[in-house]
View 1 (cartoon, each protein chain N blue to C red):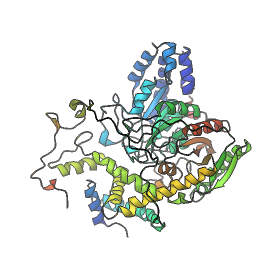
View 2 (view 1 turned 45 degrees about the horizontal axis):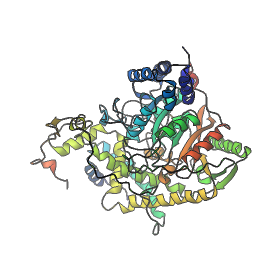
View 3 (view 1 turned 135 degrees about the vertical axis):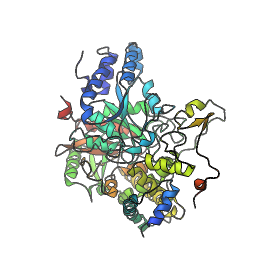
View 4 (view 1 turned 30 degrees about the horizontal axis):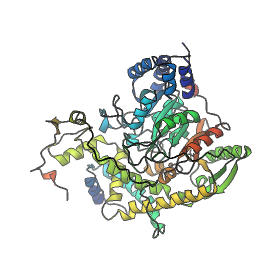
Length: 483
Length: 103
């Protein structure tokens, strides 16, 4: 039996499986063994579907070479963030509210994974309802950063990021409302992409902020991320915001004009992170790309804008958790008490905080001052990017102002936590595609660099990221998971 | 001009959340910190700026007006705490003091 299959890329596993060099059962078994060995110290998974994965693998092993070839994810183990609904596994959104919830249907992306022959290994941890940047706000347990266990993996897709970084799966799905794919990808030293808003169906993604949410791939290499992206993209009649199929804009091969927004290097950035990004930009310049200084002047308003729009939409979306039709219920003698007690006991503190903030921002007398104002500033932020992309092909900047922080470090002040999202929320507000790539290290902790492109240029973004990977190869595995 | 406890309790009622006396000071501090931070948006001149409601403009897609099978009742009610005769069961709504719309 081939050993250490868990170290392989998804693309390689698929190739080996198609060529008959290894069985799908061997692949899945090896990943399950590795997962069982390392996840107790990391806590990436909320649910491991070992039996289902092995059953799926045995079925795949009966496929002919052509059948394996036809399915781009055959032979590939995948993890799914636990705010994406699955019929045959629980979906909790890391909340007490949905602790025993089994969805009556699969998310569109899950159907696509199955159709592509992917093996679903289980569901990964997150901040409750994807609200957080550390995975500390999971109702069940925190996830640890595989590089340094006293650090957070980032969030909210921290479980998916840690699972990929530690080799439990080669690829995973995350969701990104304000950076929830890119920030944990940066903190865990992997690749994470938020596609253009509308490129991937949100049907079956538990709604947080509907005008910002997007599902995307997480992987250790760009080509693995691209493999997963191409399986999940595309229009869906069940999601009215999914975009019709349009011819992908032509990819211009380099050299590129790369814009570096000076606002992303100002207040709040850890200078050591700034140095890593500077060195990365120098490599791009040495490789013949043109580096241009540019300004995105409304960046400083992005966090304020985001923290009005996202909680407002969340407060509306989370109104459905009332203890009546599904989820946790706390019984009471009258209906209003039932609602209130259910929500009081079912939601954690960060979720409540955002519901209150959002309810206030939408409430009578405050709507214009808060929600509508934020939607207008959102226009200004979008226009900043429109102007930038008239002059450059890509915008490149740090993904986060810092590296992975220690548990509890930002507990006392939610605003401090929110300010860490400064470089990622802009892509959600503007709807554009963005990808975080490993860029370097600060004291043994990964630093991520973010590439952004104009809306619908997802393929061009992936091509550029792939080319840039030659300048900064994917990271190896953390020592502790290498056995 | 931060929110008072009274105003926060009003918002909590709107959101169907119940805040205990010990939760309130922390929530008040956190909410007011965030509201103070977001108030910087008021310094911008937005008189001639259209709000962004959709980032990528496209026509609202319509489906054919045809009856299609949907989720069977048994499936739809499977996750509910209490079901009777294919319906979600809740406590009595009429004659209950808390059953009104609040204030």
